[in-house]
Image 1 (cartoon, rainbow, N blue to C red):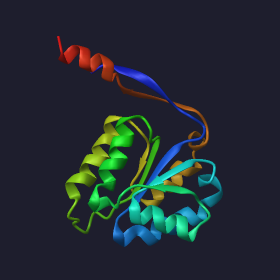
Image 2 (cartoon, helix red, strand yellow; image 1 turned 90 degrees about the vertical axis):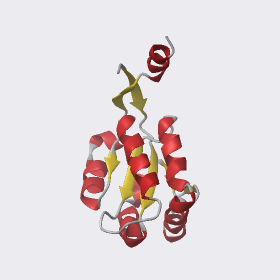
Image 3 (cartoon, rainbow, N blue to C red; image 1 turned 120 degrees about the vertical axis):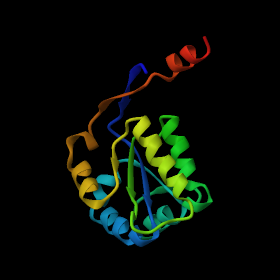
Image 4 (cartoon, one colour; image 1 turned 45 degrees about the vertical axis):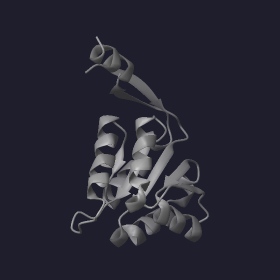
Length: 152
């Protein structure tokens, strides 16, 4: 696989997702980090994004609820280069009916090499990093070359 560079801008597109048992934790984290998050474009799955918007002054564009396809919508945005950071408070101790979608979302975030926080400690480290508000270069798969190679 060949790679190319993608620039993550200073103003990032950040996806916010949380499983049911961790929605309050993500909501508390967003409240605590409201001033930093307000400088970025926020996206969320249906319930999570709506709760954040209702309980903070943050503007969040909402997708469908995770089990209804919201995880896949966020994944599609990642694949299109429209999401720069994924904050996903996922609950590894509770099975969810849309677990394949969750795994696909995390796989896409890894394929496209975007920063991912799956818990509060990692989210805290990420938001404290200077890269959170600075321009950052990341290596991503060279999809055009991939297509050329696959269609020879």
